[in-house]
Image (cartoon, rainbow, N blue to C red):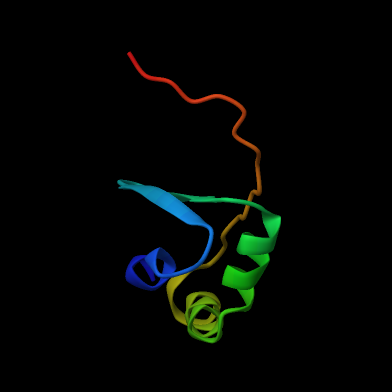
Length: 71
């Protein structure tokens, strides 16, 4: 899905980590970009497969990043 997401208008990037649990955070320009991604036909197929085969549960959080810096 990452390769497909990269092609989408408003996609800024993503970070993933996998260990005992997995987490992926994707960054988007705005909520319209997020809505378009959620409605994308290939993404909807992956969402359905995720519910059917891969995940017992998952959580989606839509958050605003107000500041980002590193040291």
